[in-house]
Length: 306
Image 1 (cartoon, rainbow, N blue to C red):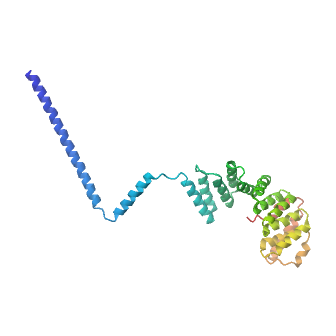
Image 2 (image 1 turned 30 degrees about the vertical axis):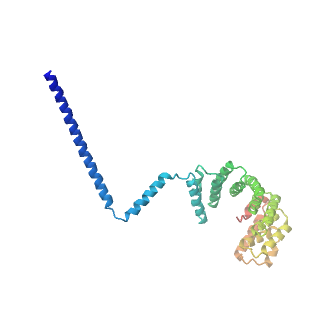
Image 3 (image 1 turned 45 degrees about the vertical axis):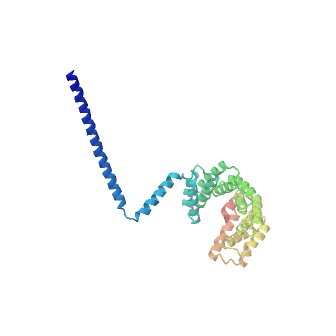
């Protein structure tokens, strides 16, 4: 009985000592934490006054960041704006890269693909432009601007049959002079001189002062063997105060094609040097000797002023 009591009392003392040691350890640890906090507080209080507004601003920004969710379309709008700014500066190639990134955003639609196509066209990437416009038409099959862009890209690649199809739809839907002019170019390059004459005439009805389209119409008449109409049309170009060197060159070509080469001697082409004039006459003679109208048109090179 005595031994048992002694063992119990000894165990209780051991437990009490362990508890006391544990409390002392906690007290020391807490003291060290308190010292570190005090040191941190002292350092914070010792910061120069000019950093206080900065800390406040950072705090406000942090709270704002926590409470404000980013707009889901922010990236799309940023890419589109950057691309538009670059286009205004004439950097179509870099603009196209940003439009490409915009098309990969979740909210991208027809507009981004259309603008990508236009930027690629301006960068002379006609194949890339064709794909971009096709993607736009997948999203909206009757998008007239995308049809115009697609037809233009195909025209520049020499895909004439497909270009005529797309540009016919675009011209009828948009009723814009440039659409009719491009359709006329595609048609005359395909050997469709009568259809081209109709397209150029429609374009001029919408934009009577467009000398480029008037030159194209005169060439279409000449290639269609309607020499009188060709001469009357090109005469109005030569008499315009807006005529430029390229219009005088077309006048010279039309006159040779229409069989009026002898009349060139009495005419003054102020914007064409004599040496170049001789080369143009020789070129016009060569083209006139080609039996195929489509081949003649391809050799002449019609004007797309837009």
